[in-house]
Length: 176
Image (cartoon, rainbow, N blue to C red):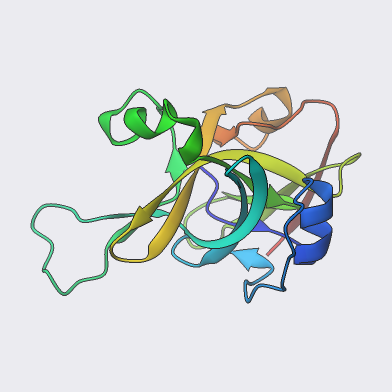
C-alpha cells in the first residue's frame, strides 16, 4: 500500500502537464506527501480541469474513538465496491487525478525498513486515479485507487499498487 509519494514539479508544471486552463497559483504543499497532509489533485469542475490542494486521506472515525481525537486518514482504496466508496466511484464529479513523480513502498524487517521508490522512466509526471469529497473535518480530501500489483511491482512484495503503473517502463531505486 502506498503511504508516501512525491511531486518534484511546480504547480505550474503539473497544471501544464494535465491541461489545467485556469490560472494556477503556487500551493503550499510539500514535495513528499504523507497521509493526513496536503497534496495537489486535478479534478474537473464545470467542464474545466482545475488544480487544487486537498488533504490526502478521507477522515474516518472508528467506533470507540474519543470525540476530540483526530480521525484516521484513509488514503488508499483497495476495493471500489465497498460501501464507503461505491457511491462516489459511480459519479464522475468525485473522480480526480493525483499528480506525482514517484511513490515509495516500505520493504524489510520491522525496525530496519527501507523505502523502494518507483517512477516511470518516460514520464516525469504521471497520474494516479483517485476519489475526493468534502469533509467536515479537513475540507476537501482525496484517496488513491489501488489495484493488484503488476509484474514490475511484484519484486517489492507489496499487495497493491497505484492504478496506473505500467510494467517495463519503471525506474526503481532504494533510499531511506
